[in-house]
Amino acid sequence: MLFEFIAALVTVIALIFFINRIGGQGRDALTNNNGNETAENENENGFLIYRGSELHFSDETLRTVITKHLSYFNNLFAPDKEIFLRRLKEFMRRKIFIIHDKSGFREMPILVSATAIKLSFGLETYLLPHFKFIHIFPAEFIGVSPFLRVLAGNVSGSSIRISWKHFLEGYQYPDDGENVGLHEMAHAYYFQNFETNQNADSNFVTHFSQFNNFGNKVFEQEKSPGNDLYSEYALNNFQEFWAESVELFFERPAQLKATYPDLYESMTALLNQHPPNI
Ligand SMILES: [Zn+2]
Image (cartoon, rainbow, N blue to C red; front, side, top):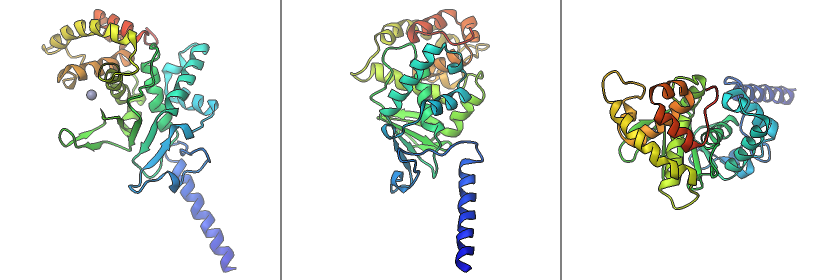
């Protein structure tokens, strides 16, 4: 009797734990190849580590997650959706996802990777081989180099780091010009193409100089009062200006085109694509 009671109690507690875990945020727990999200993925620091090559999501799962969050994908023609999914799987397979939290959700590797695929969809090379690690933090995190600061995302060494809270906000407000996922991926693609000696995309490299020319003019113009398409942060240096240009290109393309048409056109050439709905 006592045994049955304890067994029933354990079942109820386990069920409550499970519901809390996948409920709340309405997301599904991330699982490895064996369907387990257990200590085998957890290192001594309590991080969850997933090799992309062991995350075999079905096409249906990928479609469900992307369709829900990425209107960009929904606007693609059917054959392009297939290309997008193929690229997404190739990209994820090559990355190691490190989640700095007690639980992970399948949306994390899928949506962060899909953001890279969206940015690079017009390019021939898109795999970012220099960046093997994608770190996902639950919220803002502390960066230590070159100085202590609070970050929503950054790119350094062979890692891309993203705050999941800020990442989701980027897609929750798709036309406010702020998207930390696109921002960090813009830094990563620049670095891959110009700072490493591998996997450069000839179209990206060729057209970046034109973006540079128009961008430098806009960079100076935006410092004048009344010109406020870009944030003050973007005017810190040209790298931040580039990253924010990518955010504006996808989130406020009509405004970017109307305000700085030459810069906008140079970005369509550089990325070899037009944002949807323009
Ligand atoms: Zn930045």
